[in-house]
Length: 115
Image 1: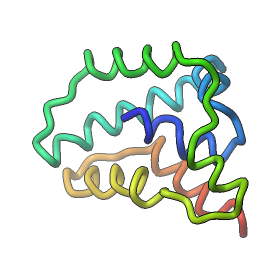
Image 2 (image 1 turned 90 degrees about the vertical axis):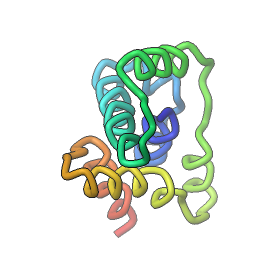
Image 3 (image 1 turned 120 degrees about the vertical axis):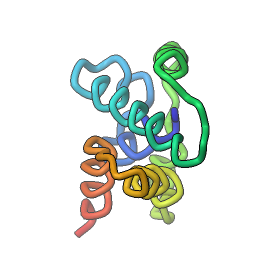
């Protein structure tokens, strides 16, 4: 849940986790991507809910600034774990017939940011 919330967005923006979770606009996107992960988890019969979402969002918001592995990979020109993180959420949401607009938008922007 936390990985989908911060990794792709940090790779796209170049921001650390604290900057993302404390910025009014990015905070909403992080929360939205984490919420979409909660919904996607239902495809694997995982019973995550609103309480889990709130706890995990507060946890990542309370951390000191962390440079995500996906941001480090992007800076070093290495392949990103985009398919295994955001792609996994998108595939599960598609299987469930639900939308994941935050994850889809960040995924698409990141996929085409080097074009």
